[in-house]
Length: 495
Image (cartoon, rainbow, N blue to C red; front, side, top):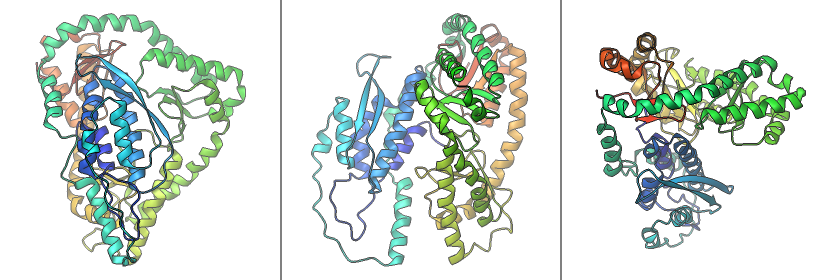
């Protein structure tokens, strides 16, 4: 699916250069993709999330800020107006290993050149490369282009977004840093050095965990909630604070009970209503903001009603393909998702009316799965066999991609159905044989990778049982001990 630089890859994709369209008078200097990549390379070295494996809070902040920076740049490249945005980044120290500092990036520029300059200057990084790039001469508007030329240009623009040869995140230096950090440690030696620290933190955090579980049950019962979920990078102590604050809010405002009844409450990084109808509250906001949102939640609930008909419309126009969500997908707001579906179904309907569909297609595509995502993303086939399509994808390109990858999608879907049952069995076996308190994994650890990891753990039980028994284990792509004592190990560990 995504490479290990998945979060930042969105930023790289979204900064692809749009060439001047006919009739457009060049006013701002929009740097090319290669220029942006080269200019920001020192910035990526300092903030890349994969370099914060042992600092999950800072990693989460950088991931979220990179996504927002991606959206800001994308809007500029599409010649649309932008709203000022404030982003926070943790920067890796050049001289001292393991140290970092936080900077706040306030963006209100209207061209990519000045955005890049502001980023570099704020982070005390050299701007020589950008300074030496001369703005291009202004071009006079030309005559109107034909419809065929406009369609060809649109296709080329879309393909360039995801198929340019330059890759700011593929630098061998960063790849080597990550690879060497993983290979330098063996699982057994790392556990022996860190397991006492993990046990101490786990024991210290146990009272907090018990209180969190009690508060979750109380809130769910008193407010008739389905469940209360923590979906944020902060530690469990922060979760407890959120639960206590919300408990006080609900006690002072009993009128909120009907709003919350029968719903799932999620404390995370955003506030809104998800496509599933879950109520999301940002863990970083104060109670007053939560209250204002909950009093007006009905406005966002209206978008929920539009989602099922739009999903059916997409399915119908693609011969009953199943419109689903990614196996491990971040929360998507209902209103945004409804708009994404509407945009794609409009494009597909127009294409169907003009050209129809290939004769090679079966009468029904109901055994295939389609995930509709925001504009900023690639057209791709996931490791679990799902077609992932951004709402901005041209219908002709989507139809062509489906035709070429149906056989592979079917194979991956079948493998996933088989592997998920094997994974569950091995998960249960590991829990029992090692006496683990918990066993979780990162979203990007697919069933086949989890099967490999769990099988190796069971094979090496004799050596690993003394250090893993009674622990909280988390399968990821790095080694780390979390503040609550959770032990993170890479799925491809070596004994």
